[in-house]
Image (cartoon, rainbow, N blue to C red; front, side, top):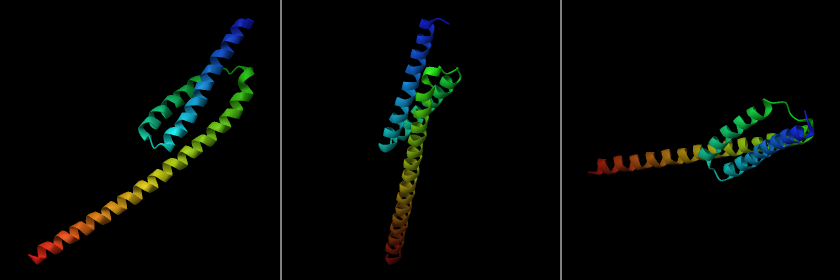
Length: 116
């Protein structure tokens, strides 16, 4: 392999990796904004990018960078999971409140009907 070919491979892999890192940061921002549909779409895209990236031999020049970034991505993904769980809990609490309100309205309507 020539020096130019090696540089081209490293450049291509570096660009692909930077896109993965950028998408990971974007996923966290989408989770903070509760943009769940966009998050799911970008997550699927990033997963494919990761599969494609690791399907080829990694240039030695990038190994340390990728190793360090993988830990950051793992931590970011954990934050996203926590935000998803928090949102699920909030939705569950909201659903409970709506069910209680529905029951109170139903009880009120039944009481009004019995007065007639």
